[in-house]
Length: 230
Length: 42
Image 1 (spheres, rainbow over the protein chains, first blue to last red):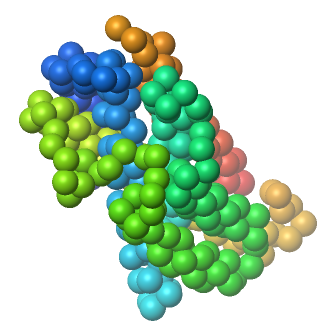
Image 2 (image 1 turned 180 degrees about the horizontal axis):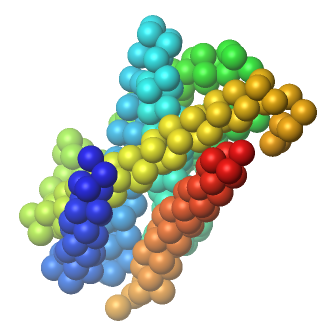
């Protein structure tokens, strides 16, 4: 498995470069927005990737609540952390696109506000994991993750249920898209998904290692209480 | 070429966020390695 990581890393870097080329060169320029529309090739795949990571977090949290397996707890933590990173990209690139197109950086419309709330839920999840030190922390975090996951479909479907300034969805929104644009979008999604997988993988290894080291410290302080390292 | 500074800003900010996060992972790895070495010495 260790040998597969650098190979996958190189393949993902190639895929990300190809995706960037598709987004900046191959995809046609949108007629009304011009080049600023190309932000869409980073904004939308980042949102989809964040949603997938939050759903994996939801699944892992359910598994943890049922089985109390450490691996499920680590997967939940890792996917929430990487999901927050991708959600941050969504919340930053969205206003950068909105400024030249809408004339404003931000508006409190349903899609934007619900995305911000989703981000805040998972940030609070990470704060809970970071600053709460008790045996119940993983269970409390898992319960919070289940609540957070309920917010994901609300964010996605908010533009269907509410009148909003946000553009209609690319998939299933009733509109049409140039096949080259769709190709660039899907390639970028694939590239960012592979990238997210690799980041999650390395973060998972780090968390496992961290827990092993913490256990070793605890064991050492039990054996030699005077020379506790922390 | 309207919107180019915004396009550049969005792409750059995206990678700054990702690289920033990866660098925190690498920093934590380095710190753990030092802790493991210290544990092995004891």
